[in-house]
Amino acid sequence: QGQLVESGGGLVQAGDSLRLSCTASGRSFSSYAIGWFRQAPGKEREFLAAIVWSGGSSTYYADSVKGRLTISKDNAKNTGSLQMNSLKPGETAVYYCAAKSDSGKYYNKVGYENWGQGTQVTVSS
Image (cartoon, rainbow, N blue to C red):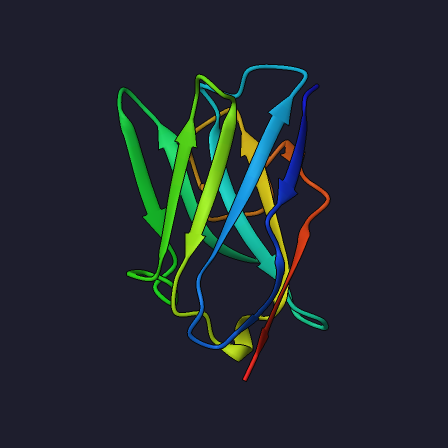
């Protein structure tokens, strides 16, 4: 089955940076696509970024975070990360990493087979 655990969340000020980690166990996720999503209170879970393996590694970002977030993956360590820069108060949410075995529709939360429990990120103004 495999499990994912996020870490690195916390309370930061607007403009600060934060690096989230996603640690996988129970199976290798080296060939899996890894996605990061967030969910604010009362809102839908939204796509942020994905790293997909399809003959080579490709990264994709939501327009709202492009240029400020960087997704990466370390297959040897079975971990992933999300570097977030210039955080804004409106980005307070629970952040989740997820994994899926195919590379299609990486932006759609439906289809991700494994999810972490989430890590809280609070951005104060």
